Length: 59
Image (cartoon, rainbow, N blue to C red; front, side):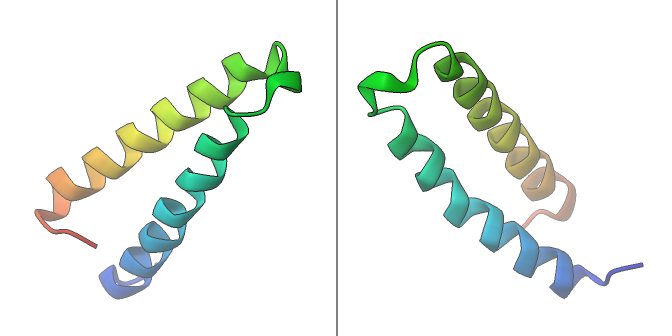
């Protein structure tokens, strides 16, 4: 099982990848994939919120 510092490191990586998802939304040719990108952003935001709530911290 990973310790909390390893989990924090992974959360930081996930937070950095969120901006890549946001940049995809600017692409006009995204089409129906826009729905999937929006869902991925929402789920990532939920994960980050739960992590912060559970560990009461800012990774």
